[in-house]
Length: 195
Image (cartoon, rainbow, N blue to C red; front, side, top):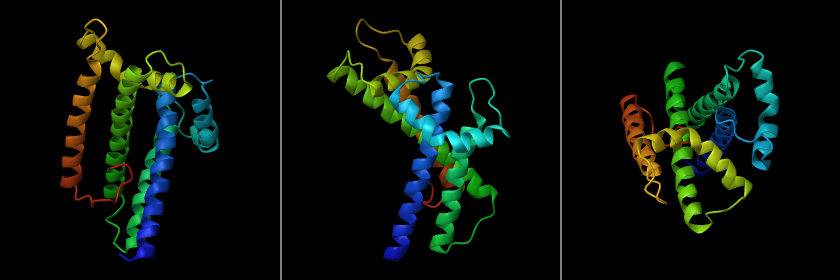
């Protein structure tokens, strides 16, 4: 791969990951019922409004599940895979296999968002435990759907909350499963954004 091809692949992968993350965040904000008036939520809603609202006519939301945002995130993953294959000159392995790789990439992106989000929340709880920064509040709202059930399994020990460790362990196991599924389906390393 020459320098120009490498730069094109890097640009495609970065744009695909950024757009998939934007639409995935839009999906998670609605799923977690995060504050709409948070400045970060406002940015995500405004940046994704036109495509999501347009696709919502075809794929209406089911309760808190915004199917349009999820479909757009998957489409960004799939398009990044297709364009990357075309740029490097590899043949297209049909439509289904890149779609499967896109699903794996999207789930991997979700796992990474939760993994690094929990890590950031733990660090924030040590450094600035009573912070009211909009990013910290939004992070807590986004992580509650995964940390809430873990708190019911592992109650806190006074001021020590062990539920993030359980969730991080489960996310690590899910990462391992995703790697095995990717290897089993013949995914090329560096092909899928977020993986």
